[in-house]
Image 1 (cartoon, rainbow, N blue to C red):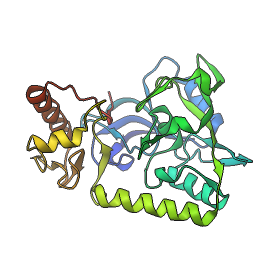
Image 2 (image 1 turned 60 degrees about the vertical axis):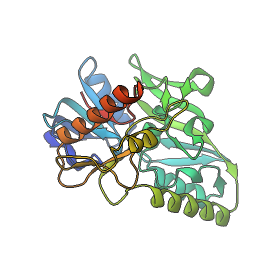
Image 3 (image 1 turned 30 degrees about the horizontal axis):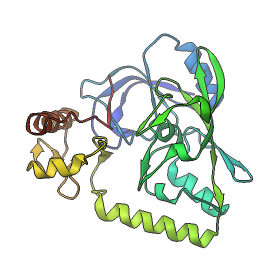
Length: 280
């Protein structure tokens, strides 16, 4: 485990922009994770997986960024799969296909990690992570604890795990044929590619879906599709995405997010809720 100073966050976030983290560490194992949390008790830190929904401001982050992407062990017992928090969803999908476990194909193409996906209750195509969670191992009040699903509250793109470092997750799937799994993974991957601007850096959907509205539809109807501030642009392919179209700064993106929020509130009296996280 090596802690480095003044680390450029554009290297580890999908927007490919932003300032420096005062300190940055990439963990080697779960023991490292526990140790760094104990040592850093009471101090400022941010846990980062793939950085696929995170934006670091241009002024940087005045604390420790704990990166979990090396925590990627996976094992299974029948149809229960135990994942360390840094397991990439692509890698999990590959593991499930090779072991004939289905139900998770909808997630193929989501660039996040298991830990972040569970904390945020990530989802797509009317599915979400909470459907598969059996148990979650967390760090709470100086102790490692295992919570059953019944002890965790899940809702749309939210969970009660938000303030707790996640170590491991137990997920339950059903048995299926490898060929069927591959067919469905390809289907969802192509569907995702056809609708999303994946050829530019972004952080996925900027805003959460409302109970009776889709932010992308409102943004488009208000004439904001394609609007630019600096190098940041509301995608012309999917207006729910902001893309780093031309060497955008984090400030460009934040200003564009604020413009959307203000316009939607002023024109539609709707308060949008952010899905992306801006580090503070």
